[in-house]
View 1 (tube, one colour):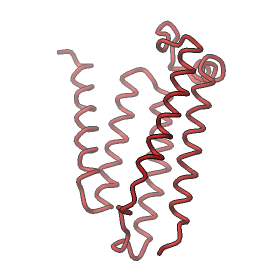
View 2: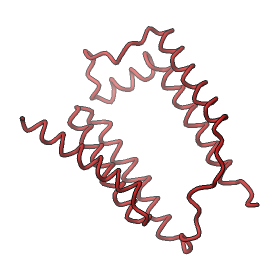
View 3: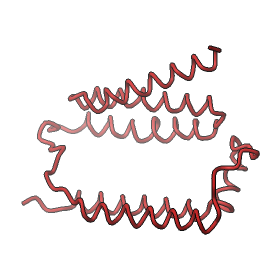
Length: 165
């Protein structure tokens, strides 16, 4: 086993173990700190794969933005013990319809563009190459993912604004 494999397994172990602690820890602060280690482990795997841009974005956006915002939000909230994590409402049919429509659109785009896999002869490590691929060859998939994120944002906003009964 060479050094590359040892480092990969180390990052994979850090990522999986800390992700398991994120979902099993009952303290929100401890869970957020384990999420920090999960994000760093994923960034390390990106570096090993040669995707330096994505690794830097992972650290800047997730660790620098989202995780710090989560920690400040939790630490500045006075009554975090009254927060209900589970709402008790399950909307299985609308979720299944939404996932089915999205997967159908994604498969239709893949069939329409004859997309098999990411081409291996193009180096994906530079920002310019990645940007050119996203606005030329993979623009439909990029737009579909943007629409999916918009739907998730609208759903989160509607759940957050729902009147308490």
